[in-house]
Structure formats: structure tokens, C-alpha cells
Image 1 (tube, rainbow, N blue to C red):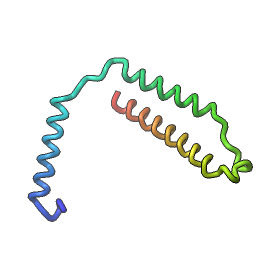
Image 2: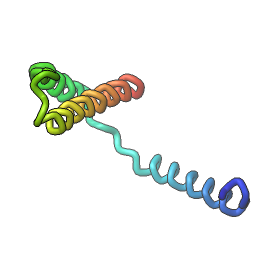
Image 3: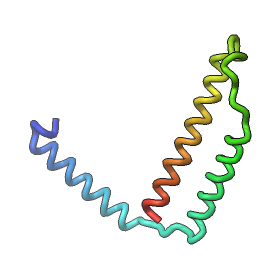
Image 4: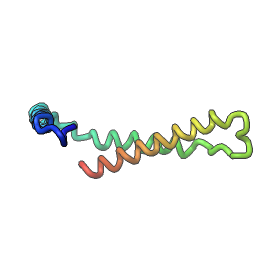
Length: 92
């Protein structure tokens, strides 16, 4: 829609600039120990995930969906932790 309508594009760009100015004006410096607290939490969650046994595919028949859901949750936590770790490395 923006490609076909110059007014919409101009309004969108103006809104972006306004939000950037607002974000800059209201920026808050994080505490100095925030990075270490986040990193400690990631490490702790990683240890918990590593300690849990992996379900053998041979024992899964009736509980397959529940076990798959648990494994997907573990993968999501690991992925979220790794994403956060990469963001922290990039920004700090």
C-alpha cells in the first residue's frame, strides 16, 4: 500500500521518526550488572535442560505427543537463550 500511495509512505516515515525520537528521549540506562544477571540466568536454565534425560523413541508410543511437546519447549528455551546470548554479545 505504501508503494502505491505517497501520503501513506510519508505518514509512515514520519511516524517512524517520531517513535525513534520518543525512544531516544525516554531511554533508560540499564543497571551495570544487568548483563551478568541475564547471562547467569541463561547458564542456569541451560544446566537444567542439560540434566533432563532425552526420551528414547522406543518408549514413546502413547505419550508421544506429550513428550514431543516437552522436547519442543526445551528447544524453544534453548533457542530463546541462544538468541538472547547473541543479542547480548552484539549490544554489550
